[in-house]
Image 1 (cartoon, rainbow over the protein chains, first blue to last red):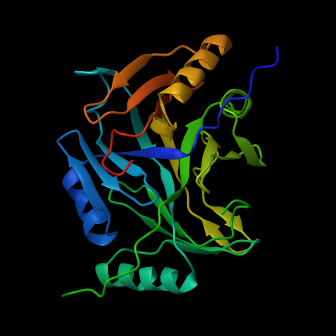
Image 2: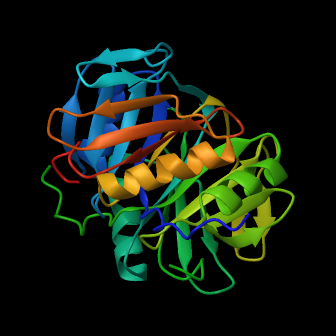
Length: 143
Length: 143
């Protein structure tokens, strides 16, 4: 059966990390990384991370049951373990500026990687040990 | 101490999900959702998801040790449990087209939610039960 072509899904608009202490996550993502808060509750800290997309920092355990809302039921989910996300940085000058900022703030740089296509990454840990990468263009064909 | 302003991090360029069977994930993300593969290995299926960003589908357990590369060491990570991501859909017409496609393909629509600001979501499950949302503009102030 040949399906009619559909308009492609546009992009990822929400990425979620599961965190043990949202006030600690707030200090990292807002005070150090510089993102803007969009919504704050005991269940969720949502931050605007550029590209018209949102990073959802969920209180671990708070999303394991369906959430009724006026407009319908939000299904349950709940991650554990150590996740990975990567943020875009324009170039190596900005990457170095971020590395210096992390030094000032006592955020350890766990690793630095140069990629075969060009592009360079630094890796840090968020307060939940999630592996956070800052990456310049050149790793991926599309970035 | 007042830190000098830094150029903001641009956006999320990599989002990761942890999956039990990458061939099953491939059937879902490439054959049903229509994304393009960028890299395929036993460890990782990377797909281009629009917005110059990448969804990393990691074989669960394959990323729990550091990965040496020619350019440096990629730190370990490894999520478990049920994660959540959301993809952007332009409008309700496209959302309905996707809902019809899911019906054709036997992908159950778990829930449909209308948001207070406008915007509407449908929720499905990927093969690992990750909660996948398709969402039209209007939930968030920035989308």
